[in-house]
Image (tube, rainbow, N blue to C red; front, side, top):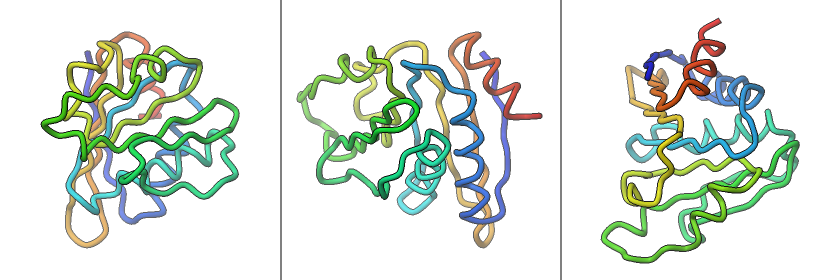
Length: 151
């Protein structure tokens, strides 16, 4: 299990980091995104979507829980904030065991449904528009992804 931190100076760099990450992902990969409101989780996901070839506008699925996008690989963008203290399972296994990429914002609220193998991403505010983005892996596959992101 490895960890790595990167700093982005603005929203554009945060999106570009997501775009670069997209090129390293494989079908079935699950990413969790944590960070305060407005930290850049959706901005990061927009970059990821662009890197996956998604043509539609990506926005936060706060009220729908899951939004699906077609690209080189399908993107399943989840915002599970509204499921805090809920027993509801909206078929997470079907997404996590698919050939798409699952991105889960506020993943701590559905910890019991998450697969063990995933890439955890935490986005934190710094001064101004800069962000510290911490990647932590739970598998050798994501160790390699983190290693590629560093270069």
